[in-house]
Length: 308
Image 1: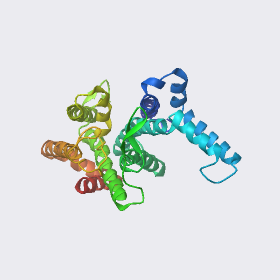
Image 2 (image 1 turned 90 degrees about the horizontal axis):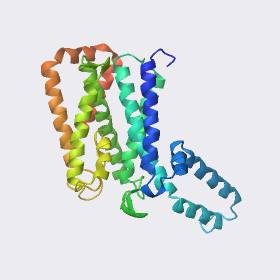
Image 3 (image 1 turned 60 degrees about the vertical axis):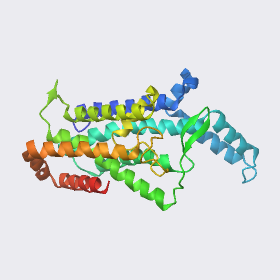
Image 4 (image 1 turned 120 degrees about the vertical axis):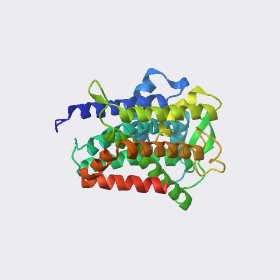
Protein backbone atom coordinates (compact mmCIF):
# COMPACT_ATOMS: atom_id res chain seq x y z
CA UNK A 1 0.00 0.00 0.00
CA UNK A 2 2.83 2.39 0.89
CA UNK A 3 4.48 1.65 -2.47
CA UNK A 4 1.48 3.10 -4.27
CA UNK A 5 0.04 -0.20 -5.48
CA UNK A 6 -3.31 -0.02 -3.72
CA UNK A 7 -4.96 -2.57 -6.05
CA UNK A 8 -2.49 -5.30 -5.06
CA UNK A 9 -2.83 -4.34 -1.39
CA UNK A 10 -6.61 -4.74 -1.63
CA UNK A 11 -6.28 -8.10 -3.41
CA UNK A 12 -3.81 -9.32 -0.79
CA UNK A 13 -6.20 -8.22 1.97
CA UNK A 14 -9.02 -10.11 0.26
CA UNK A 15 -6.76 -13.18 0.13
CA UNK A 16 -6.18 -12.91 3.88
CA UNK A 17 -9.93 -12.55 4.48
CA UNK A 18 -10.57 -15.58 2.27
CA UNK A 19 -8.03 -17.57 4.28
CA UNK A 20 -9.70 -16.64 7.59
CA UNK A 21 -13.18 -17.53 6.36
CA UNK A 22 -11.95 -20.74 4.71
CA UNK A 23 -10.14 -21.83 7.87
CA UNK A 24 -13.28 -21.12 9.91
CA UNK A 25 -15.57 -23.32 7.82
CA UNK A 26 -13.02 -26.07 7.17
CA UNK A 27 -12.16 -26.36 10.87
CA UNK A 28 -15.73 -26.47 12.13
CA UNK A 29 -17.98 -29.45 11.60
CA UNK A 30 -21.74 -29.30 11.23
CA UNK A 31 -22.13 -30.23 14.88
CA UNK A 32 -19.94 -27.48 16.35
CA UNK A 33 -20.86 -24.51 14.16
CA UNK A 34 -22.15 -22.33 17.01
CA UNK A 35 -21.34 -18.62 16.95
CA UNK A 36 -18.67 -18.74 19.67
CA UNK A 37 -16.65 -21.60 18.15
CA UNK A 38 -16.80 -19.98 14.70
CA UNK A 39 -15.51 -16.67 16.10
CA UNK A 40 -12.71 -18.41 18.00
CA UNK A 41 -11.59 -20.13 14.82
CA UNK A 42 -12.06 -17.04 12.63
CA UNK A 43 -9.78 -14.86 14.75
CA UNK A 44 -7.32 -17.68 15.50
CA UNK A 45 -8.02 -17.61 19.23
CA UNK A 46 -8.06 -21.40 19.58
CA UNK A 47 -4.28 -21.83 19.15
CA UNK A 48 -3.69 -19.14 21.80
CA UNK A 49 -6.10 -20.83 24.23
CA UNK A 50 -4.49 -24.21 23.71
CA UNK A 51 -0.98 -22.77 24.14
CA UNK A 52 -1.97 -20.83 27.28
CA UNK A 53 -3.53 -23.90 28.90
CA UNK A 54 -0.54 -26.06 27.96
CA UNK A 55 1.89 -23.57 29.52
CA UNK A 56 -0.28 -23.25 32.62
CA UNK A 57 -0.49 -27.01 33.13
CA UNK A 58 3.23 -27.42 32.46
CA UNK A 59 4.07 -24.87 35.17
CA UNK A 60 1.83 -26.66 37.66
CA UNK A 61 3.02 -30.18 36.79
CA UNK A 62 4.60 -32.20 39.60
CA UNK A 63 6.15 -35.02 37.61
CA UNK A 64 7.65 -35.11 34.13
CA UNK A 65 5.66 -38.10 32.93
CA UNK A 66 2.47 -38.62 31.02
CA UNK A 67 0.83 -39.89 34.22
CA UNK A 68 0.53 -36.44 35.76
CA UNK A 69 -3.19 -35.70 36.22
CA UNK A 70 -2.80 -32.22 34.74
CA UNK A 71 -1.24 -33.72 31.62
CA UNK A 72 -4.17 -36.12 31.38
CA UNK A 73 -6.48 -33.14 31.78
CA UNK A 74 -4.82 -31.38 28.86
CA UNK A 75 -5.07 -34.48 26.68
CA UNK A 76 -8.75 -34.92 27.50
CA UNK A 77 -9.31 -31.25 26.72
CA UNK A 78 -7.68 -31.69 23.32
CA UNK A 79 -9.86 -34.72 22.64
CA UNK A 80 -13.18 -33.38 23.96
CA UNK A 81 -12.87 -30.01 22.25
CA UNK A 82 -11.46 -31.55 19.04
CA UNK A 83 -8.62 -29.03 19.21
CA UNK A 84 -6.09 -31.07 17.25
CA UNK A 85 -8.39 -31.77 14.31
CA UNK A 86 -9.71 -28.20 14.37
CA UNK A 87 -6.21 -26.72 14.23
CA UNK A 88 -5.19 -29.10 11.44
CA UNK A 89 -8.23 -28.32 9.29
CA UNK A 90 -7.94 -24.60 10.03
CA UNK A 91 -4.32 -24.58 8.86
CA UNK A 92 -5.34 -26.50 5.75
CA UNK A 93 -8.12 -24.07 4.85
CA UNK A 94 -5.88 -21.08 5.37
CA UNK A 95 -3.06 -22.56 3.25
CA UNK A 96 -5.32 -23.28 0.27
CA UNK A 97 -7.08 -19.91 0.42
CA UNK A 98 -4.83 -17.16 1.73
CA UNK A 99 -1.41 -18.60 0.83
CA UNK A 100 -2.54 -19.81 -2.61
CA UNK A 101 -4.23 -16.56 -3.63
CA UNK A 102 -1.44 -14.45 -2.15
CA UNK A 103 1.19 -16.41 -4.10
CA UNK A 104 -0.70 -15.95 -7.36
CA UNK A 105 -1.02 -12.20 -6.78
CA UNK A 106 2.57 -11.65 -5.68
CA UNK A 107 4.06 -13.81 -8.43
CA UNK A 108 2.12 -11.95 -11.10
CA UNK A 109 3.06 -8.56 -9.63
CA UNK A 110 6.75 -9.52 -9.47
CA UNK A 111 6.83 -11.00 -12.98
CA UNK A 112 5.27 -7.84 -14.43
CA UNK A 113 7.72 -5.72 -12.36
CA UNK A 114 4.84 -3.95 -10.62
CA UNK A 115 6.53 -4.92 -7.35
CA UNK A 116 10.29 -4.89 -6.89
CA UNK A 117 12.31 -8.04 -6.38
CA UNK A 118 13.75 -7.74 -2.87
CA UNK A 119 14.32 -9.85 0.21
CA UNK A 120 10.90 -9.12 1.70
CA UNK A 121 8.97 -10.13 -1.43
CA UNK A 122 11.09 -13.26 -1.83
CA UNK A 123 10.55 -14.18 1.85
CA UNK A 124 6.80 -13.72 1.49
CA UNK A 125 6.70 -16.12 -1.47
CA UNK A 126 8.84 -18.70 0.32
CA UNK A 127 6.65 -18.63 3.45
CA UNK A 128 3.49 -19.07 1.39
CA UNK A 129 5.11 -21.94 -0.51
CA UNK A 130 6.18 -23.63 2.74
CA UNK A 131 2.64 -23.32 4.12
CA UNK A 132 1.15 -25.05 1.07
CA UNK A 133 3.83 -27.75 0.83
CA UNK A 134 3.43 -28.52 4.54
CA UNK A 135 -0.33 -29.00 4.13
CA UNK A 136 0.23 -31.51 1.32
CA UNK A 137 3.10 -33.30 3.10
CA UNK A 138 1.07 -33.89 6.27
CA UNK A 139 -1.08 -36.37 4.33
CA UNK A 140 1.80 -38.89 4.48
CA UNK A 141 3.20 -38.03 7.92
CA UNK A 142 2.61 -40.34 10.87
CA UNK A 143 0.42 -39.93 12.94
CA UNK A 144 -1.45 -37.16 11.09
CA UNK A 145 -5.14 -37.97 10.55
CA UNK A 146 -6.42 -36.92 7.11
CA UNK A 147 -9.90 -38.36 7.41
CA UNK A 148 -12.08 -39.27 10.36
CA UNK A 149 -15.67 -40.32 10.95
CA UNK A 150 -17.31 -39.48 14.29
CA UNK A 151 -13.92 -38.84 15.83
CA UNK A 152 -12.48 -42.17 14.65
CA UNK A 153 -9.39 -41.93 12.38
CA UNK A 154 -9.98 -43.52 8.97
CA UNK A 155 -6.96 -42.33 6.99
CA UNK A 156 -3.65 -41.85 8.83
CA UNK A 157 -0.19 -41.04 7.49
CA UNK A 158 2.19 -44.00 7.65
CA UNK A 159 5.71 -42.53 7.49
CA UNK A 160 7.56 -40.73 10.27
CA UNK A 161 9.19 -37.36 9.35
CA UNK A 162 12.74 -38.63 9.87
CA UNK A 163 12.36 -41.37 7.24
CA UNK A 164 13.95 -40.90 3.82
CA UNK A 165 10.70 -41.81 2.04
CA UNK A 166 8.87 -38.95 3.74
CA UNK A 167 11.65 -36.46 2.96
CA UNK A 168 11.57 -37.48 -0.71
CA UNK A 169 7.79 -37.03 -0.66
CA UNK A 170 8.29 -33.49 0.68
CA UNK A 171 10.72 -32.74 -2.16
CA UNK A 172 8.17 -34.06 -4.64
CA UNK A 173 5.47 -31.86 -3.10
CA UNK A 174 7.80 -28.87 -3.35
CA UNK A 175 8.49 -29.27 -7.08
CA UNK A 176 4.84 -30.14 -7.81
CA UNK A 177 3.41 -27.11 -5.99
CA UNK A 178 6.12 -24.79 -7.35
CA UNK A 179 5.40 -25.78 -10.95
CA UNK A 180 1.63 -25.37 -10.61
CA UNK A 181 1.77 -22.13 -8.62
CA UNK A 182 3.95 -20.60 -11.34
CA UNK A 183 1.92 -22.10 -14.20
CA UNK A 184 -1.11 -19.79 -13.96
CA UNK A 185 0.62 -16.43 -13.25
CA UNK A 186 3.18 -17.07 -16.00
CA UNK A 187 0.40 -17.75 -18.49
CA UNK A 188 -1.31 -14.50 -17.53
CA UNK A 189 1.95 -12.56 -17.88
CA UNK A 190 2.39 -13.81 -21.46
CA UNK A 191 -1.30 -13.62 -22.47
CA UNK A 192 -1.90 -10.24 -20.88
CA UNK A 193 -4.15 -8.31 -23.25
CA UNK A 194 -7.53 -9.73 -22.20
CA UNK A 195 -9.28 -7.41 -19.75
CA UNK A 196 -12.63 -7.13 -18.00
CA UNK A 197 -13.32 -3.73 -16.43
CA UNK A 198 -9.57 -3.13 -16.41
CA UNK A 199 -8.76 -6.48 -14.77
CA UNK A 200 -6.70 -9.05 -16.66
CA UNK A 201 -8.19 -12.49 -16.44
CA UNK A 202 -6.42 -14.99 -18.73
CA UNK A 203 -4.66 -16.76 -15.86
CA UNK A 204 -7.88 -16.80 -13.83
CA UNK A 205 -9.74 -18.44 -16.73
CA UNK A 206 -7.00 -21.06 -17.10
CA UNK A 207 -7.11 -21.83 -13.37
CA UNK A 208 -10.93 -22.00 -13.45
CA UNK A 209 -10.82 -24.50 -16.32
CA UNK A 210 -8.34 -26.64 -14.43
CA UNK A 211 -10.48 -26.39 -11.28
CA UNK A 212 -13.51 -27.55 -13.28
CA UNK A 213 -11.56 -30.54 -14.62
CA UNK A 214 -10.40 -31.42 -11.11
CA UNK A 215 -13.95 -31.08 -9.78
CA UNK A 216 -15.24 -33.56 -12.36
CA UNK A 217 -12.45 -36.02 -11.52
CA UNK A 218 -13.05 -35.66 -7.77
CA UNK A 219 -16.77 -36.30 -8.18
CA UNK A 220 -16.15 -39.31 -10.41
CA UNK A 221 -13.65 -41.01 -8.10
CA UNK A 222 -15.50 -40.25 -4.83
CA UNK A 223 -18.88 -41.65 -5.94
CA UNK A 224 -20.32 -38.21 -6.68
CA UNK A 225 -20.17 -36.86 -3.11
CA UNK A 226 -20.70 -33.05 -3.16
CA UNK A 227 -18.77 -32.67 0.14
CA UNK A 228 -15.59 -33.74 -1.69
CA UNK A 229 -15.79 -30.90 -4.21
CA UNK A 230 -13.64 -28.66 -2.00
CA UNK A 231 -10.66 -30.89 -2.81
CA UNK A 232 -10.77 -29.61 -6.40
CA UNK A 233 -9.12 -26.36 -5.23
CA UNK A 234 -5.92 -27.88 -3.75
CA UNK A 235 -5.87 -30.33 -6.67
CA UNK A 236 -5.19 -27.44 -9.03
CA UNK A 237 -1.72 -27.05 -7.51
CA UNK A 238 -0.94 -30.51 -6.15
CA UNK A 239 -2.12 -34.04 -5.52
CA UNK A 240 -4.36 -33.99 -2.46
CA UNK A 241 -3.71 -37.64 -1.83
CA UNK A 242 -1.26 -39.54 0.41
CA UNK A 243 1.33 -40.53 -2.18
CA UNK A 244 3.18 -43.05 0.03
CA UNK A 245 0.20 -45.32 0.65
CA UNK A 246 0.15 -48.55 -1.32
CA UNK A 247 -2.20 -48.18 -4.29
CA UNK A 248 -2.38 -44.36 -4.13
CA UNK A 249 -1.24 -44.07 -7.76
CA UNK A 250 -4.35 -45.80 -9.08
CA UNK A 251 -6.85 -45.39 -6.24
CA UNK A 252 -8.50 -42.30 -4.75
CA UNK A 253 -8.34 -42.16 -0.95
CA UNK A 254 -9.48 -38.52 -0.69
CA UNK A 255 -9.98 -37.00 -4.12
CA UNK A 256 -8.31 -38.31 -7.31
CA UNK A 257 -5.74 -41.06 -8.06
CA UNK A 258 -2.26 -39.54 -7.93
CA UNK A 259 -1.12 -40.87 -11.32
CA UNK A 260 -4.22 -39.56 -13.09
CA UNK A 261 -3.75 -36.18 -11.44
CA UNK A 262 -0.16 -35.89 -12.67
CA UNK A 263 -1.10 -36.98 -16.19
CA UNK A 264 -3.94 -34.43 -16.30
CA UNK A 265 -1.61 -31.57 -15.41
CA UNK A 266 1.01 -32.86 -17.84
CA UNK A 267 -1.58 -32.76 -20.62
CA UNK A 268 -2.58 -29.20 -19.69
CA UNK A 269 1.08 -28.14 -19.66
CA UNK A 270 1.70 -29.60 -23.12
CA UNK A 271 -1.38 -27.89 -24.58
CA UNK A 272 -0.43 -24.52 -23.10
CA UNK A 273 3.20 -24.77 -24.23
CA UNK A 274 2.13 -25.66 -27.79
CA UNK A 275 -0.18 -22.64 -27.82
CA UNK A 276 2.44 -20.26 -26.38
CA UNK A 277 5.32 -21.28 -28.63
CA UNK A 278 3.13 -21.40 -31.73
CA UNK A 279 1.16 -18.17 -31.25
CA UNK A 280 3.09 -16.26 -28.55
CA UNK A 281 6.75 -17.05 -29.16
CA UNK A 282 7.73 -13.37 -29.29
CA UNK A 283 5.96 -12.65 -25.99
CA UNK A 284 7.73 -15.60 -24.34
CA UNK A 285 11.07 -14.25 -25.59
CA UNK A 286 10.27 -10.79 -24.22
CA UNK A 287 9.45 -12.31 -20.86
CA UNK A 288 12.77 -14.20 -20.86
CA UNK A 289 14.72 -11.02 -21.64
CA UNK A 290 12.82 -8.78 -19.23
CA UNK A 291 14.80 -9.35 -16.01
CA UNK A 292 17.50 -11.57 -14.49
CA UNK A 293 15.08 -12.68 -11.74
CA UNK A 294 12.55 -13.62 -14.42
CA UNK A 295 15.07 -15.92 -16.09
CA UNK A 296 15.82 -17.49 -12.70
CA UNK A 297 12.08 -18.14 -12.13
CA UNK A 298 11.65 -19.65 -15.61
CA UNK A 299 14.65 -21.94 -15.11
CA UNK A 300 13.30 -23.01 -11.73
CA UNK A 301 9.89 -23.65 -13.31
CA UNK A 302 11.45 -25.82 -16.03
CA UNK A 303 13.50 -27.82 -13.50
CA UNK A 304 10.40 -28.42 -11.34
CA UNK A 305 8.40 -29.73 -14.29
CA UNK A 306 11.19 -32.07 -15.40
CA UNK A 307 11.65 -33.36 -11.85
CA UNK A 308 7.94 -33.92 -11.41
